[in-house]
Image (cartoon, rainbow, N blue to C red; front, side, top):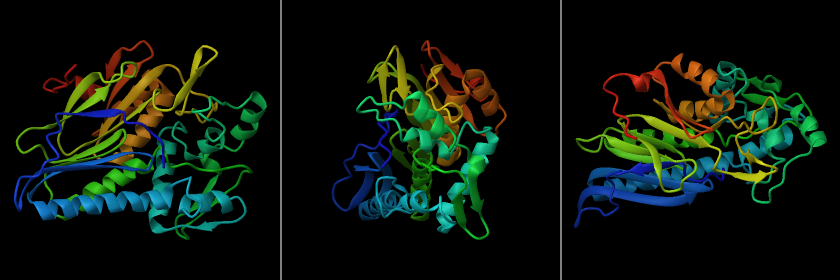
Length: 333
């Protein structure tokens, strides 16, 4: 659905993918292609059948969210919104209402750096074909961008676009939501040690039975290498990078992380990784910090509670938020 390649590399995840023999349990892992990315679930279960059933439930939830929120499926709720909200208020499911409310909250928090209405500009880029809008196209599309033009009625559970040409994209949001839902399903089934990943978004439950989960942040310019390894327990992480979907032309990189204010791709950073309690927060803030840049982005992160960041700037230098600089925090380089 969202077409993002993997940005976070699980390091020593501990789920070998081979359950214990017989009817007993152990570590088990499965990976499927859903939402245009790799969906991976690794968990420990004392009962093999219960573990496999839990993984089935996660994959079913991923498919459900894909069907509801894909911009490429004409029957999805998101596609219906984009077709109809420019003409009249469109009824929303409770789930979509909650997501759009959260999106609005993050837009306000980041002063518009996170904005799902960027899609009016974003749809003009074709990264595979190397196509970008000209100045005239960009000017017209930018007039339709702005979260304040999204008329959301939470009580009536409806949404309406108040600018011609508006549309929304949940690609920078729904994967975090999917990972959050998936881990909630696992907890409901009594799973105490697990990792769920959707491309660059991961969330871990508990630890690896006595050791922390270790998540590696990939080097933005050297595939297969990592710039840092983070020990995690009961946490989420999301990485946004300029290497996910892009093309180079005229001496600059055009990538999918678009500044809603300009309609262009910022060039001051290569990647942003956010750690927080939930996937939605991680995904929204990873996009926002990339747009805001190092100084403004780190000020935003340091003002939040239970949120940290690892940033790679345009020169490849690593930067950490204040919480990760504290004594006793085990970040490996």
